[in-house]
Amino acid sequence: MQYTKQGHASYYTKYHIVFSTKYRRKIFNPGMCSYLRIKVFEIRKYYPELDIIEVNTDQDHLHILITIPPKMSVSQVVNIIKSNTAREMRIKFPFFQKVYWDNEGIWSIGYFVSTVGINEEIIQKYIQMQGKEDSGQAKLEL
Image 1 (cartoon, rainbow, N blue to C red):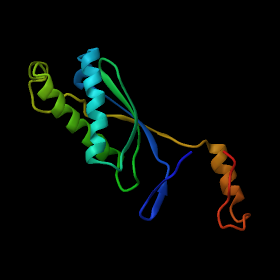
Image 2: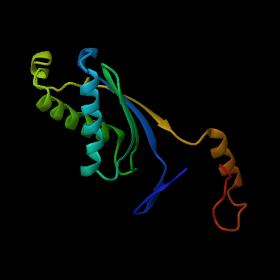
Image 3: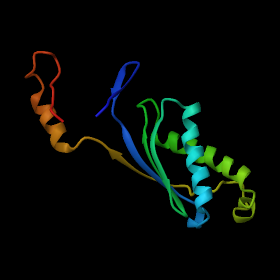
Image 4: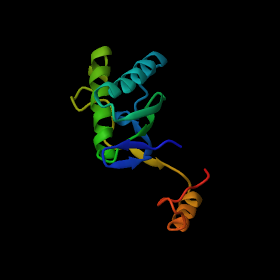
């Protein structure tokens, strides 16, 4: 397990994020999925503090495994990804103008998010070990 250090914080914050196309339309073919994956990974150029670990798609939704720093909210990151990918997809594939005639984008409003972290047993053991180490921090065998 690798912790990230930034300013005055050390963190391990991985999230599994899923969002779907508007109206759950099955609009992505394999070529479009590849282009979408590239565009998601390109977001790291502009937001280097985001660590995009894994991206995968289906015909109507996108899965992302990502590390988000504590200074950013999950909703802020979802908005960044949705707005950037929607814009790029509309430019590359003009037929989206016919599929989605409004200018609200290709993504549905909501999203699913789940944290991915060390298991509860390890955290419980870590808390129990507090104050028992001379070095100031409890050490755990992961």
